[in-house]
Amino acid sequence: MTTTPHAPLIIDVAGTALTAADRRRLAHPLVGGIILFARNWQSRAQLLALAAAIKAVRADLLICVDHEGGRVQRFRTDGFTHLPPMRAFGELWMRDGRAGPGAGAMAASNAATAAGYVLGSELRACGVDFSFAPVLDLDWGPSGVIGDRAFHQDPRVATLLAKSLMHGLLQAGMANCGKHFPGHGFVAADSHTDVPVDRRGLQAILSADAAPYGWLGSTLASVMPAHVIYPRVDSRPAGFSARWLQDILRGQLGFGGAIFSDDLSMEGARRLDGRPISHTQAAVAALQAGCDLALLCNQSVGEGRAVDALIDGLAAAQAAGQWRPSPDSESRRLALLPQTPPLPWDELMLQPAYIRALELLPQ
Image (tube, rainbow, N blue to C red; front, top):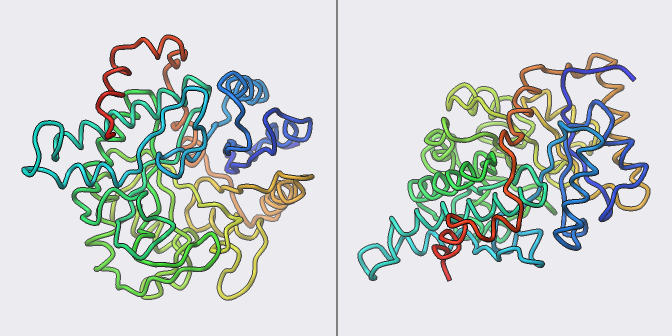
């Protein structure tokens, strides 16, 4: 097996412990990380053992999870704090001047930082490196898939609360991921099951939904683009668009961190330029457009043939010159790994900063 300077694939595993097939896939040099789901969870002890087994395959693998709070929180039992949806912080902000102590903009900012610290420190105590958070989409109302996952409709409020939450993640030693660039909140369709289309012009999007990405340019560690088409800007979904990723996100907004594709098994990623595409074709298109990392979820269940096909397909695409590994992309991936040791769970439970953070969370 040839070596590569870039491991762009983020894959998953089916169960609560690694199989021989899982270990084989995770050892492949094109695989750079793993995303966990609720099916991979039984208890804190089990999750810690699973994380240790993953790191035993390769210490540089990035262990990820979608763990935002509210309805998107994979681990909810055995001591994990039930975090509120991000809208709760926006609602707390809007009580500024209309309620007593513990409400308003400053209280909301402090609470968001506390949520970031609780989120990051609990995950890290169980061996998880990284969460795809926070959502930067605006709460326009029509989007059921975003909904209360968004902080607010006002991009200024969303930005400041997201920055506060990212500060808490940083305190826990965890990087962050702003999603879904340039914004998923304006469209009603769900990109898991449809191909959403946002017909607004570029300036309308840049002045509202995409504004947080510019304002947070020095704070964001990574970004995940939306499987949404913005036809007045590009005919391709943002995650497959060099116009969005290279010209606008990197060029115009100055973002220098890692770019993840959203899940390539979603309906919004299964067609490109009007034609159905394979997972491999989707990964190659995402990487060519400017993504550093390509994410494929929920395909390991059963025999995991789709995962093997993606790994083999991307290797063949590399050999054919259809995709070139990027040392810059690999550096961005490695930069997302925690740089400090985690605080063990039992010590975390007694830590004054953690106890204070719990007290600051909205009830």
